[in-house]
Image (cartoon, rainbow, N blue to C red; front, side, top):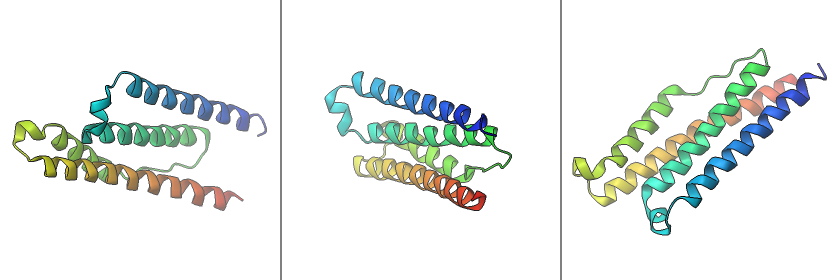
Length: 127
């Protein structure tokens, strides 16, 4: 068992480094005006949600227990993000676009909070 902990920690560190790299690429290749767009917020929230899902996959691979993300909540978040992305083509006003982007970020955040709560609950059960 002692050999499993450093190996699992190594993958967590690699995943964290990849997340920082992706966020750095988003910041570097985005102009300043784009950060006032609701889509920039949705992209950053989606990257954060993907990081939590990647950590969930790495933990499930390393342990016997299998935690599952709330898929229905992620699908709703993706739907909100897609509608907000194509809001100009659909004819939705800017206030609704901001609301849809906020709903997408909220659902990604709630889904991530549920997963992280399950991590903590699982860790407490192991002790």
